[in-house]
Image (cartoon, rainbow, N blue to C red; front, top):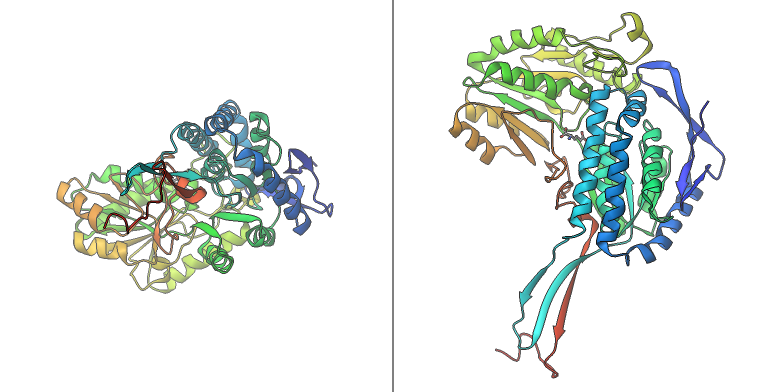
Length: 493
Ligand code: UN1
């Protein structure tokens, strides 16, 4: 069996304890991918010490030179795209056309972050005093801890790691225990791109090791993507330690279909939003809110199209929907479905594990649609993170928006309408970090702010230029060239 190591201070090393853990393919539980380092406190200490030491020099490397290395990492991701896509699909299941998209998002992020190293704009403003100049600019912070989920094993870490390093920080990265191989590949790429030792370190292991990174006194910033439950715990720890933290957590995203929508397009969008990545995206369409005049028609069209989706191993040509991440997740999803039916939902299709032929070997769940879901039903409120779409009837645009906002989360949202007034009211009134018009709730682009309000986040935005607000501090500088003491607020007034 293949054995993989941690990447610390530019070297490939086993866990100090020598312990390992195994990871399996969710599409075929007999397929063991390999053994990975089971990192603990000693490994975290080593990685953080390396990152702390490397920071001393890395912060002084001119930003555009740092950008050259990040750009090269983008080139290597592009060169290895097909090969890495297969590695990712084998460990987390989504079809290779999706894992290729996942890598493309990292390539886009690399090129954007590299170009940003020639901007990283600051501000200058006039001084209130004579012969004095005021300016402010971004400075790096130090060691950044990055902890991410398994559903986007390259894209989501790239959103944090690449801008953090481009801005002059160093990183200790813990990939999800479900996707350690992608974490190892990330390190291979950063090594080949020519990052100095210690600037980027990868530790594989389980959740408790992530806590050790969060609590380490020399880690100054945490970038986290994962469940609301764990994110809130991390937020509490960081609050206590006065540590900056960016949290990207759950979603319960809704797509609205109005009676004036292009229904074919709206159905196509709902299918991709709900069942792309087997519904395992924080941006997944988990609720569909349909105007009453097209409600039954939408349900019929959806059922016909959903039943045609090909469930299977993501490595096989022609697969539309892959497995869910593991059996424990599958059981959780199925329990939500059972509860939805008990509470009054109407099963349109799916609702059970798929066990035909080869599917019996993996964690496959049939794409599921449940209609007549009401706001007090559990399935209307809680994140499921699986291929389950809850459909609710709306009386009007205002009612649809009210239903959309009746939610603890606020990441993504969508409305299909051909009425420009409806579209603009939705843009104004929907409570979410992202709103799509005539497009599904998934599909954010790397150069735009990404993140949510309410229970989804804590006010930060990854992606684009806004991610640098997470990974830099502002330094304000006053240069007085008057050759005398000038007292602000006093001498001029
Ligand atoms: C996630 O699910 O954590 O917008 C990220 C999207 C993708 C990113 C999803 N570009 O769906």
